Length: 432
Ligand SMILES: [Zn+2]
Image 1 (cartoon, helix red, strand yellow):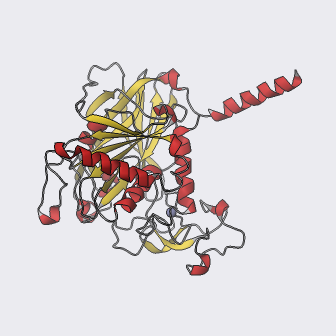
Image 2 (image 1 turned 30 degrees about the horizontal axis):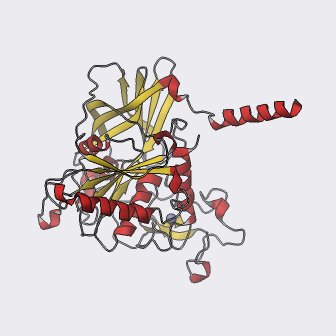
Image 3 (image 1 turned 90 degrees about the vertical axis):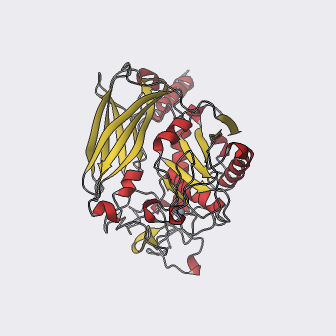
């Protein structure tokens, strides 16, 4: 009897601790997704939001046991409060195209830009307040937008816009609430190129799951492909004045960086993706020219037919899924003063700190490894703190000499800091 009581007590402790701090899904949410579409307007110092449209979609692909975001990643975070009880019931950290825009020369000089973005959450049962906060240069959050949404508001649209696209399941392992659900959307594939889209998606997803930690966690993922049809093949290439009528709006030369290929057509992307439950969006471009991009909790984009396609597909997914920073520092600097000196970056794979107790991956560093760790062959394969990361040769550090976020190859895999961050994210999206 005593043993039984102890067993029951242990089970209770386990159940309590596993949901500690997390609201109960059924108390606040029902099936479906609430999508708030916003225009985000401004420049370096000032930003405004205005509402485009509020939508109820059929699916929310997230983990019902992980409503409050415990990862603390991203430049922005939105929090959702139940108005009746004044309790926090949902939050997500994220980055956006606007967040990158404000680091460009144009925005710093005062040019105003407008970008479309969406907040995605499970559909609430009762009225909610949605609050967006943004980190400042010192990493301090400040409120930038508030909105109240009543779920019975008749302005909330329920139309589905791209229902006619076919969907293919590439990997199926279980219910969306217990799996990381990836959706791949094809861009620049015409109606007669759907066979190529299916082959390209299968090939590159195979590459992703050949790399750790995805390789050993493959059973925690579902992957679906939406066979989205473009009117023309390929994507926009502004430097050649070559503009294609591609459905999802992918374009090279975003922010005047030729290899940076992302889309500002968020509305279409979300409308197409709404056909299936998803946690993570991948845009696959029917293109040979080198390019791609990945924005945390928004999407990753990669080209299908370049000799570096495997690397780009995995590297950009690392940005979008794990919130990983670029670890390289030798190529052209893409952003103005991206990481201010002395401020610890929020990304999990780079640090400005040199004391072992505070380095994000400090527990992975062996006792006899010098910090900073000399960048020579003696320390190849060793976890340490190597200077040079995040577009900066000095003052920022990475965990390993090489990594998919450092050099253009997937052969050496992700470094220990990246693997740990990606594993944490897989756990957050799947564990009870
Ligand atoms: Zn890394």
